[in-house]
Image (tube, rainbow, N blue to C red; front, side, top):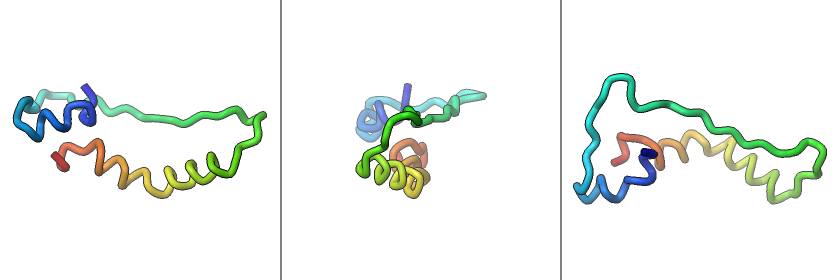
Length: 67
């Protein structure tokens, strides 16, 4: 279960994380787009933002330490 999906329940002590060997499963996310299409300025700005802030976004939203 993605951590972001159960964050509130963990904070309210309705669920707890039980450590299990070889977990959590680490995944990698990618953003794709068609090279043949023109990228609008908003899309370019969004990609730049993600590249600059990806570590902070990950730590704030997907880290076990933040719960």
